[in-house]
Each structure stands twice: as C-alpha cells, then as structure tokens.
Length: 305
Image (cartoon, rainbow, N blue to C red; front, side, top):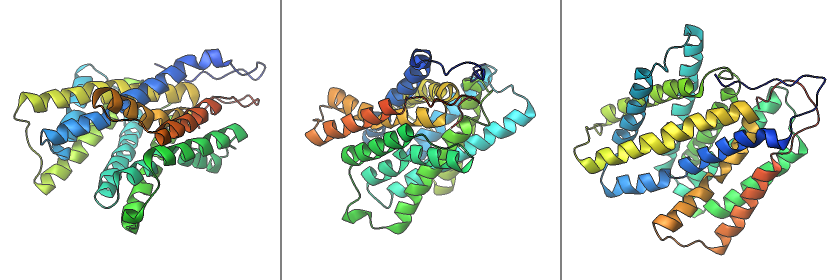
C-alpha cells in the first residue's frame, strides 16, 4: 500500500525531484477530472439525467472494485473510509443543489476554493501555513476568479451561495482527512468506499425524486463507462496517491488546475475559444500551483495538510 514516508529528524527535506511522482499524480487527477464538463455536456445532449448518470457511474465503479477485492479492509478502516465517502457525497450533493440556485461559474468557484479550507483545517489542527502556501492560495483564488468569473447579479441567492460554500468546505474536509484517516489505505480501497457511498446517495436521491432510471441506449452506457474510467477510476486514486505523497494542502493547490484542463479540452474538442482573461487567469493558477510546491525547512512528521 502507498504510504507517506516519514523523513528522519536527522535528515533534510526531500528534494523537489523526489516529489515529482506526487506532482504528476495530482496533475493527472486534475486533468482527468477536467473532462467532467465534457461528459456533462454530452449527457445533457443525450438526455441522461444527473441522478441516473452519477448513480450508475459510482455504482459500477464500486462493484468492479469490490469484485477485484479492493473492499477487503479491517472493520475500523472500513468505518473511516465510509465516513470519508459520506463527506465526498455531501460535497457533491451540495454542489448540485447550489447549481439550481446560482450560476455554474459561481458554484464552481466556491468548490475550487477548497484549498483555502484545507489550509484552514490544517491551521486549526496546529499546522501553521507557510508564506509560500498563503501566496499560492492567493494566486489560485485570483486566477480562478478570472477564469471562472466572479459572482454577478444572478448570484444573490444566499441559500445557493451557502450551499456552494458548503460544497467547497466539505470537499476541503475530504481532501484534508484523506491525508489523515486514509494515510495508510490503498488508493483503490479508498475509491471503492467513496464510490459506494456516492452511488447509494445518488440512487436514493433519484428514487425519491422519481428520476432514477436504467440507461436504455448504447450512447447512455458509453457515457457512463467513459465517466467510470476517466474521471473516476483514474482521477480518484491518483488524487489519493498525491495527497499521501505531498500532503493535502500541496495536492489540493495542484488540483486547482482542473478548470484549465477543462478549458483546454473544450477548446480542442468542442471548438470553444480561449479568451485573454482565461489565459491570464490560467497563468495565475499555474503560478500558484508552482509556488505551492516549495517545501518548508522544518522537518518532522509526514505531510498530512
């Protein structure tokens, strides 16, 4: 199983070269997660409802991983991973609830500030953020504001804004606790439990709302299998591995490149133009992600925040 290696107090911090696998995993997670917008647009065009899409996406992922034996963990570890899954599912539900009340750009912006919550949770737990982390956070938030857009007149619904902020806070908690309660868990085992809870959550929502259905066409099944593979089976384990290697704060700041990948894919595959503001915001986000990779000089426990 992948574990964060604890450096010896007598040695210095590992070089950036030693962190390259973790950085690559975080960027891989962001890139594959950045395809969600494409899958969402294709699903909307195919008239595939959100509860049906997500319940089958997460459900089939969980069943596949369970069949491969990835659910075989001790009872105490299972309880922790299921709780982590509940936090992730809660974040996702809050995000979609906010989309019904405020603009997609504002909802996305509130989710993407999750690294700010990671730094906050770390500070509350006694981990003082470094100046580099704070500078990286500022660059990332400013860049996201430019790329995604700042709240406008259509975003005065306080409940919608609150739900968006709740989504970001829960996603930050998900990242933060991934590096703590799941520090010794295999990434695929974590993915198994998170997707299982998410599948049950969206199946219940769809059933209660009368919108849960069995996909009827090859197009629908193709979309579900595509989401199962790219932004789920690749993205989620890669993110857990990155958090275990880099810590939640550094990994989460790298995942703020998610909207940049989304813009790139939209430009390449959907012929959507890239404007100057998007390029400027992208430069700020990349600058923040790069700045976040500076290591503090103090040496001690393995990174968890």
